[in-house]
Image 1 (cartoon, each protein chain N blue to C red):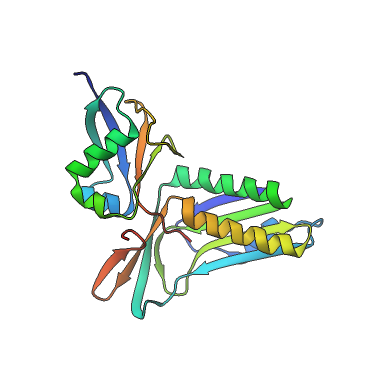
Image 2: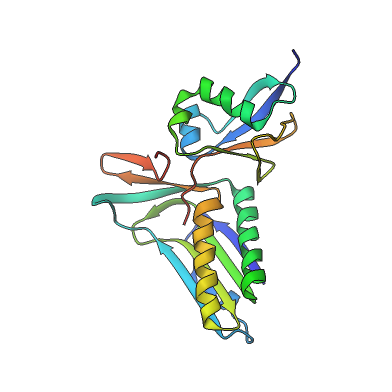
Length: 83
Length: 138
């Protein structure tokens, strides 16, 4: 099975759980956001305890069905708390 | 006019109000969010704000554009601070200038409420005996 290497940014508590701000993850080609989340949840079970975990692709929130490419900037967005 | 910025130094309310000023507007509202000294009775020493800056700017831009459209606002200024903030310091300033006062209040409330829901900024509360990312867990 062909895989692609995704570049991922982690913020807030997600950064603390993963232990770094930027990392890469190999996933099967044409994986969706939903599939990426399943992989993240199994690699880092602490993420499952969060109230929510959104994924942004190239600075936009995306739907779970969105397909991911190696060139995307992917960001893990735990519950935001600005203001 | 829309002015969206993220700073790692103290925010300036007078500057935000002056920027939003418009001779056509009949009402300018300013919301100033500051660091509270306690959470649920527990003493907060300071807050540490982190942001995914390019996306935070783009999400705030969307909020400001909505405000302009929905309330006919002349100007929307949104300044947010990141880094370590001490109790009493200003974390966010929003100023909205509209033709009449009712719209200015409503629009400003919408802007801060939506910012808290969508803009990728996170705060960690630092206590005497530990630290907690706000709202992270159910």
